[in-house]
Amino acid sequence: MIKLMIKGFAYDVSGSPIVLLTDEEEEKVLPLWIGLLEAHSIALAVEGTEMPRPMTHDLIITICKMLKATISRVVINDLRDNTFYATIDLTTEIETIAMDARPSDAIALALRSSAPIYLKNNLADNMLSISELIDEETKKELDKFFNVSNLKKTLH
Image (cartoon, rainbow, N blue to C red; front, side, top):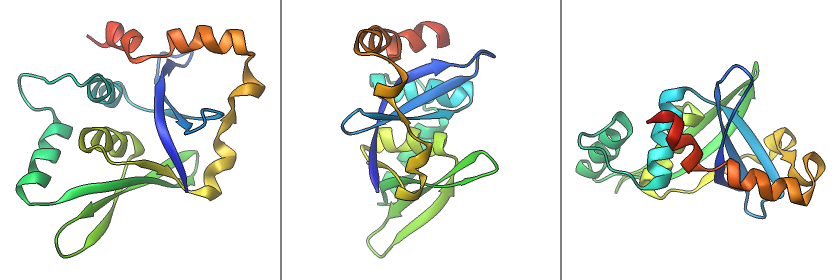
């Protein structure tokens, strides 16, 4: 499996948010189109921002803690009809359960629980090579733009 990290966010021409996940070497990127609310939740988690009242993903983490369960990892494991699928591995004292989830929700929960995010190897062809897409100077400029602070300005 390929371990992924949040690189930042982008928007498509219609204004839909895209979360950009890279491999550990930051050589390839997996763009995932997500909803605005999920983008906001992911951005808050990346920033470490705490809201005065728990948001849905915060509530789920609290429930897990109360039940002595932990999110051990998230796996983006399938692609069907141009839609990615994911599982959240929830570990208790007794067992680990793989629960079906939308990748955006799984990512938001992984960030809040410091769980790793993985992509199954058979989906690696969906990752784009950063070096083939842009030159080094453009990459540096994009690194400044595709970050959480730019998303924060538009979501708050």
